[in-house]
Image 1 (cartoon, rainbow, N blue to C red):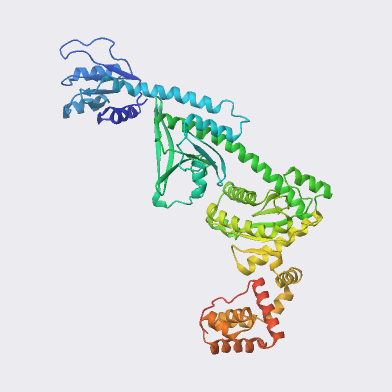
Image 2 (tube, one colour; image 1 turned 135 degrees about the horizontal axis):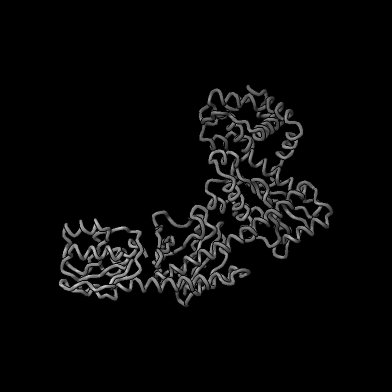
Length: 572
């Protein structure tokens, strides 16, 4: 123990008062009690080096203080109610000694307990480390969590870096936060995740370090408390504060953390960090294998169909009955990276979190699926199973897309994702085509609806035909755009009018002027004037079916090409 810690312990646990700190880094290995009277000669050997002296003398003379300095004492504990004189302070400062005053009635055992408590905690620390670390290799995380819970004597739940609850263990009967299953149920019922900081207002969070004093210093563990209604939940991050490997939730509803609990929590976090890092390496390796499989599937370089199905089987998916492809893509990821200027490890961490999040959500709705990361997106192959017949695949895929967007919004608040969904391909030899359909749906959805879109290939209609024309001969679409909507877009951009929006609304309302006027909060004569102006600019009459078809296609081409008025407004 060092002098600074020793003085703080006396102040906190024995009611002492700090007067002079001395050299706070000097070691203190014990206490020595001065039993000499003021007129008696000093006893030899009563004080050894690095022992703090305890005296009840009425006054402090210079010879006595020099004897303390010569013996190597780091400090003096003076049992008195008097205030040290200025002369005493100056002498002690010159000699480099610390000074603490303590009421004379304070039992000596309370002072010595400072050292006996730290010795007991040191033994407890060694025992906890040995119990948690020995034989941990090959131990499932669930068993390790149970071991931690048993040592704690209270419930704990482990959450990984992307919000998965990897396991929870029940503590003593009646100690849970929820009547229906304890801490794990409480976390799930309230939608709490330390990784996403969701579910609790900032004003109802509190974070501070908890300490346990050992002979060679203090152990420190960060603990955050969340107040949820009339209950409280506690968790501690595992690993580096800026990028935790996970979070350990604890039920402290029955009793707060004691020093021995802090010691145990310290070693529990160290042990779980190592196991989570192993799990992370395993997942990254698996993601790499899955990514290679997806790359081969997309390129068509997967060899025979039997080999394709065999590789999918190794990855836990049965694709013999075909599958539906779904692509989750990060919106404007290059711009995001340029703005944030992240290092490569941070970029890979974002991609890994996205891949883990997609797989986590897919597992909630599907039992037969395969995920694979690819650049800034994640590919999902959703296959039929006993619990998910093929006719339910499209509806469940759309539900999954919604869940993924909602989950990612909480996990990575600065990012959004768009999702493209292809059609179900019953023949596994058509999986490459199924992926292409999802890719087309994704691209069209992003061009038409912007970020955070969910698009299916079946809903793209005419867009997919125009998209293929754009891929094969983009000049053809540019030419068509120039003959239809380009003059209207140019007019809106120049004069701040709203002709394009009016035309789009009019065509969407089955050419009803009344419905369009109601939707745009404008008079029908104003709508008519705008439509006539569109006709003058394009040479196409909105009252003729053929011309309306041309204008409808023109709008779709405009959206695919990414053209729109630069300064649209609501004025005519």
